[in-house]
Length: 278
DNA sequence: CATTTCACCTGGTGGC
DNA sequence: TGCCACCAGGTGAAAT
Image (cartoon, rainbow, N blue to C red; front, side, top):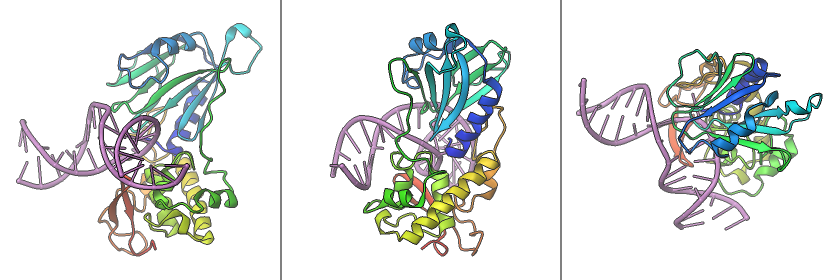
């Protein structure tokens, strides 16, 4: 479900509620798909650990975990990595609350709260990284919010694929998904099928600024709730109210009234204004 | 190597 | 009401 703004919103919300808390008990469902690390190893590694902080890298939620036995030591000794896939949710609840269908993980905390991972389509992934054995989590691509003009332009140089497909490639940029690819291309006035390597330097700079503006605005509004996205408290976002093209097929363009087109590109529904985007 | 296609899943919606 | 086709925030493996 979630792209950079939604994941950022969730990570902030979870961090505010569980930072400093201790994991007392971990429970996992019996479906194998969501577990990049086997559930028994995850449970063993999680139980007893202290949550130092929770933050976002690309579309991944990173929980930095410390070992209480080495008290005074605030260096993380493990990371719990949560990827939400298309329909994943990470919620902070009370243990007594009703357990939603498709709940795959429950972490009971010393404070009495509980972290729950719910994911109907099971495209999400949970992973535990032991920092004593392995390096910490790193996204492959660049962070779109902080990338500079030269670095951004270099990503697309001499690439033949469509600019939208390039925006979705997480080894180039990390965190951009279908909504914000379409919305940033609209705001930059660029057609999604244009070959990435053929964009002018000026177009690429318009795209970079449009992407950063859209992502920052969406974070401010708590993300886009298209069908069922909610943050750590179960609250919906509001950026969907400012979508110009995404899921607006046939509706009038907000600037020129031309009906919005939908095509298939890189296997994804792709929305654009045939008049505003060249 | 770069690029494209497809499988992986459940659930909601709209047509008939 | 039921049945069916189609669509949905992602990604990694296989094919081209």
